[in-house]
Image (cartoon, rainbow, N blue to C red; front, side, top):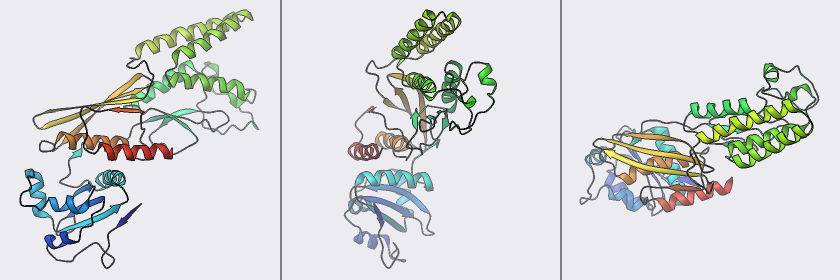
Length: 352
């Protein structure tokens, strides 16, 4: 929980000098917002102790960068939000920076949200489609993918090799509909006809799950069993179709780079700086396979520390409500707020 620090119903000391305001700072975790004489937010930060952190900006011995020195000279007021823990302050800081984009904060150039593939397992006949937010706790989400292009490529592969329905119509088993072109192309078994058993369709869903989770050996084993059974029933055309499907999927899996034999979810971050430019690269590894990578470019970062730059990306990736938290996050160096970040991520993971 968070609470606004109040004095006579408002966090303000009128026209009193900022140095006088510093005497009333609480020794508690939270977020501070430095404001100009007209009330504009100049800078947003978080602290384990608001008293110590905010006062540090106004110490004569403070060794600030030129950017921060200019910001401090413009500060007229400070707004505080107290949080119960430093971890809460970390999450709130990211939300406020993203919302207000203060002039003196180092900002990421791109403000993206990553796409996921959503499997509607709560439906009688589940579908798979692209989303940017994870709002449905009853659904299964796969990703995140580095770009919409990557996510759509996955959907195209699923559509080509797994006869999963794509229609948005509600199928509760009480009505039958005329199948669409996908049925004629053998890209859907058309549960809309009302003749497809839930168990038969569920087998397709399970195969899609295996594919999305990178369980290629288990998936190939299932298909080889199906091919053998079809052959024994003298269904040679079906057996040949399954054989072709196996060969095609093997080529798909061969193109995916395997980076971990453990089959775990990992994000690997690295930071590179040259002159005025800074970039953080992130590798998204899911089930031991590389989904892809992304780059975060930072503007106005020449005076910011590497720790600060890495923190911006970590907050952007993992503190949002729809953020995917992998089992392991590998960093290029020890991050100063690592303990608070781990606490925040553990709490978020527990809620899910």
